[in-house]
Image (tube, rainbow, N blue to C red; front, side):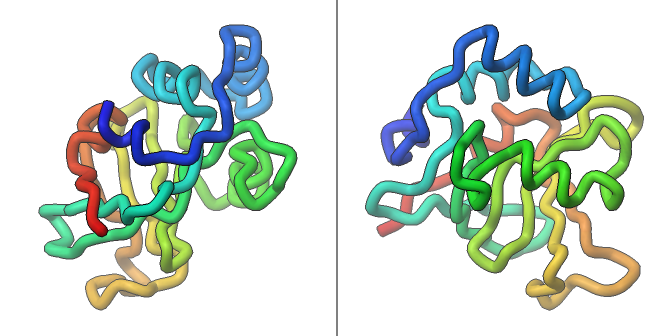
Length: 151
């Protein structure tokens, strides 16, 4: 996976770590996302930019980092999700952060199931008080396939 090769990863997670994470988040994580965490435990771009091309937004977003189980709360998936839990629908978790501070989230159940960009800082021109969450992809794997490496 080319994305993983361009990440300074936070290590990896084993099955026990993943189960503990699901318990802490009170959510069943999608299989493709668990596979990603088992190899990376999140991470930051090494030298290049990870650019996400979002067709529905007609914008490019830069991925700042993918969250993981981390002692540093800035990168800790549990801390981020606890901080924003009351603002998110049930069965939703934050897995990454964009350079402008917006968050990449995944809804795992229901009609709105999929990966979204939550422009919590209203940094995009199309963002308004009525609309600040934008659909990106059906699955985490589909999300990863939209990422390109830019220097």
